[in-house]
Image (cartoon, rainbow, N blue to C red; front, side, top):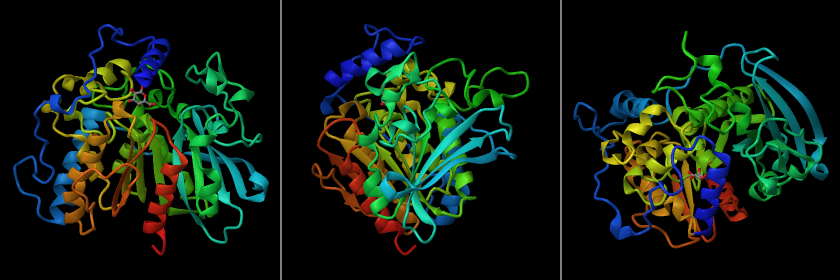
Length: 430
Ligand code: GTR
């Protein structure tokens, strides 16, 4: 309840364009017996009704169909990769974090010009690595300088959502913001286990508020004569996912990184984003969704906790405009979120929930993994192996992974422990 109150007050204070007042907002359902009856759209049947019983039919027909439905109805289509991006290494230190890490900062200029928008990558690699290292890549909420207690990280000057605890004053970071989200990034463990970390502030790609897509990367790609994306074109989540792929473009040029072993990880709205990035861009070798909820791993049709009605009114910029058609009409959606998880197949995918994060519908997150399994099996992997939700703190780790841990909506060392084990399981020797 407290979390709900907190979310509501954050939304009301931060979101001047909210389409709903608190009183108008539908009351969330947390009662399993009140979940509406639903049938999930068939994963393994083509739009013309043909049974998908071979890997070939999946790759040639069904997968492209599903991808295109998510593009036009949920997240919006994103533009092709830009041709002339410019990468600039702006700092490098080979004995950062008391000698444990190589730290690099790299600016990616999307248009190839320093006058256009850019995103800044913060990269930590194990200092003692002797060959290219696998990395975790993740967007953050308040700037790269928040993810570690490292005073040399460039302090972001971008717009940030209001948040006193993170040291944000007048929508800008201050010195107090340094390390403010360090508990969510288990950097020491990541480095000790032989992995690197690539961090990006999501607001470098598109600031997280509804401004009619006038800032961030959207204006660079409007159709001729148009001042905002069409109803089937990218919203903010798609722009963030597109940015993750551009970061991967850079990693392909960095000899210290093993760009074939990049795990994309995100929490909450950024977990919705890591799933969409991993679904579209098959260069991501492993995909992790942490507490991603509605529009992420949770099945929309269950309408448990956050619903399409609430999310699209509170965050009108996150999805494409076509997604509004399905508000209170979830059964008309041609997809559900298990199909998003299935787009990651056969690559390893891990979905995590938290007991107290009912707003994100832990069971709905579990069911998406379960119902995506037939594709993983069709493509010859071990799949998921579970039929029922595991007990709390008892992770499942096959080709598909899942856990529900004790505690709240957050990223904890426990979550990272599972992601590192899962990455070891799939990256070692590959
Ligand atoms: C909430 C939103 C969730 C989730 C969360 C977050 O306000 O309702 O869908 O994205 O924010 O990103 O922290």
